[in-house]
Length: 591
Image (cartoon, rainbow, N blue to C red; front, side, top):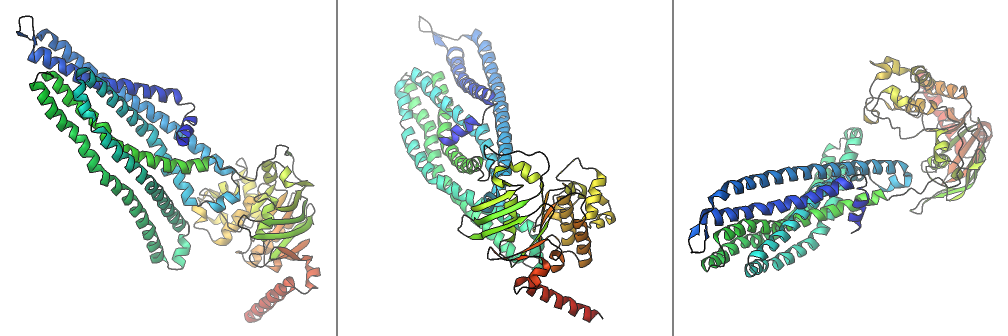
């Protein structure tokens, strides 16, 4: 099967130790058969005795000590062998899982926005944890136990055949029934485990969303609603898991009864054969001991098939992530540019359509010269964020061309392009790190003085008032900071890499007017040349821009400077008048 071939491919580096461990399974399983054989000789030759030429029973007491020593040595050797097997298999499985997890994480880092639009965070986390552990369990335990049981079963049958063929055939007559039962179980349990896996993914996703959005939950007093949602997902997962497990319990009594019947058959048939002289007491004792060895593989077959179905369900999810490939990649003839970009950006009849068919940008054309400030305004859903995302190739245009420094962004090396672009996104994300670590995220070697300088440019002087200053640990996603504080740290982070192109997506929406004025002044007086794209809804933010673009339904409906747009009917003048009236009303109320 493909999953097994895929596992073998990823065993590279651990194949020798793993195969050596499986070879030792053969040795250990063979040693399991040695004890009943030695016991048989002790009973027949020492305890019962062997008839001599005259028919008298002769007990070979001189063999007792060597046979007992051999019995002890076989037991100790078997224990040591299986200990080594477990260590080798566990080491290989842990190594493979670590390698796979590293690869999957790196592969996820290479994915584009479309990948994260389609995959839920909780599901991805479940693949990296629960599904990966199922692969480890399969390599460390399932494969080993299957091999061990096959060897024991075959070895036991061969030994039985050497002693009494008829007795062996009587015992084997039960095995076809066990095969039929386990085959039917395997076919039915597979879909149930896949369904259980999907329900677990829903559960993890719901929990992750609830934890990440805990402030919103509390703000709307929806704790009871979220508890009910989680309880429903939890109940669905429980029901799916119970359905799969109950199916196993439905078949388990049949499999167990058939396996245990071997012991009964051994005692009945073996007793009769001993009475009629076909078996010795030692041989019957060996048969009785090995009957359990023969029954155990049959007993475990259902459980192993159950675990294998879980493995196939989990590995299918892992393989899907393993072979996921981004649609936005470097071309074979991509251009590398290690020096700083000049920052010239040109949109040439650009359109963008998502895979669901929604056309978010239509025939966008404009030019931003190096050092210019381009302001972008428009109603919610007009395509503002999608437009700036095309510059950094977070998405690729489906029509037209986006040029940076005179070259299509698709021809630039992605890493070189993005290193020249600083972004402060609408959805501010801060890492669970210090304030210093968050600001210096783009350059870990940045000096403390530079960190403070860019924090000052972003009006983030509030950091100095924190108890531990720049060494203050920020909670997950910036918990403990206000919206404006998070925005200013995100702005400082974007400025700290001294980008040739700076993209600010509604970055000052949560700051007061005075702070915004300071930030605007800082952006105009940057110590490095920078082309700025600013998405905003405040006229105070956009009025000093070299060019203002007004978007509506993915199209540019107005373009010009502040004065030019005020002289025209349309969205910009309406917003200006609305905000001017509001400001005047607030000023009059204050007086």
